[in-house]
Image (cartoon, rainbow, N blue to C red):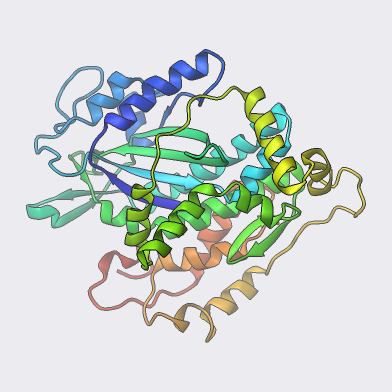
Length: 387
């Protein structure tokens, strides 16, 4: 799932830059962050993220990391950046646990490809700079300066593959001016970006491991991974749901409040050997699951079935569903390009050769479905079909 949150304090992220780099190079912990994005390239930022570079872009008045020159004159008074988090389905994190070191690297490479495609989509359609009084004017941007941090675990030490794409609140418009990011567009397009990310991740993992997929509660999960194992390694979600039950409330804002109320300090760095042993013991002692046996089943190492491509609907069938009475118009009288992309994503299961082709298929199909825009919603659709 993709989430988008404003950053009001950069201290946590600055500590992350320093800590991750140190822990990784002493033999455990997370990998150092890396720069991506069109504006990062424009600024000459590449490779590992340093605390100095990150701090320079996150100042109230952002400055160039090398020259120290101010990049914009109007300060960021409320939002210092945006945290776009790409989180893999729990069964994908469980698959990662089942594999050896080389296999785990392949899973994380697949995750990086998928998140990269999700962020490319946001750069292409949701990168806008704000100008004018109270940000009343929006101008397309050239891309973001993204500090990407890849993590393996949740705060409770459960397997939970996710990437934080942290975007300082500075963007260059197509006309060369620089200003703050229009975060509204990031929020509006997050579900479409999630559809791209999830479909690309499925395609990449199927290509690399031959896994198949099963839908559970609207989410495609790796076939063969027990629901009980996913629940065991979802302690953070259980804490949030328990808090919501205690409060007698629900909804997105309440869930965010519950997440903050139950938030603990992250567990310290954990070497791969100790992590593997702990998770294997947890699966065995609490559920009676032998992870080696489970790996053979999920990856079909005994070759009990003939490998075949898990095909979804054809392009024509997907479009027919979307424009039908139970499609896009079932719950909304108006919809735009981003809504169409979000609706197509779940139908693209894993039959694309790789993540790039899966993402491009979704976007191409979305261009073929006519938008139905409400009056005055200029930025509802940016596909070129309707303005």
